Image 1: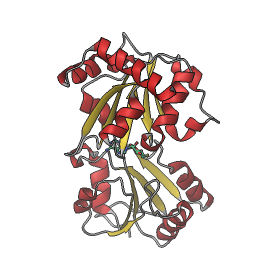
Image 2: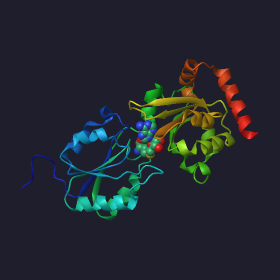
Image 3: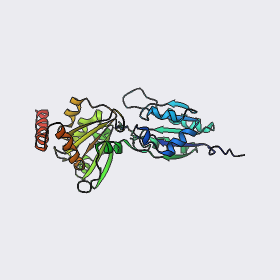
Image 4: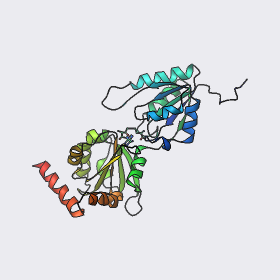
Length: 272
Ligand code: SAH
């Protein structure tokens, strides 16, 4: 007989977006699934506050924060398969949206290889939370034709065509960029992007500790070092954020010309 109190889960894993940290930004569907789960596998970046929504569940922490001690991806995949095969209602809770730099592709491949069904439940990605924090449209129609979510992981070369990105009239939203800000800066400058292109880094978007650092492409690395920018942060680059960047910069006492002069001076200093 089928149980009526909750859906039958027959070897199905829910890959669920936890959003950027503010619990109110979780979807209703994610909240429901958490309240029904037997097992929740949670990332570092998925806010711990959400665990109050699944007091009945066995929670497994599978932190994967870059640079720190982390659970190997292959182990997480084995665990997902193991828990689903044991007949458990499994929720894999990932920060932001599971499909945006969340390595969900590997988890899907592991589930498919094991013939286990899955469903993705989207979440609000950090880049969107950063835009909300700044109070801007990433696709302001006068300045940007679109938006690109990218990682600075590839800033050393290989896959990313930085020249194309630098000239595409897109707003760039860069994930995992804090340790690679210098490579990101030089790749975009070499690609032809202007020194005074506005840049805002948003740390801990949507959380009480949220902070925005406003700068320009020419000055960003130096400013991030001086301001001690910390992960998690997204770096937003492009003309669509110029008005907002200027407003933030003015509130710190500098105007456009000063921002531009600052960029030239800093790049010249860095080159000397
Ligand atoms: N799937 C996640 C991204 C995971 S990659 C999402 O959709 O948001 C991890 C990177 O996400 C971090 O290095 C940082 O660049 C960004 N990030 C995650 N949460 C953040 C937050 N609250 N504020 C700013 N950046 C965040």
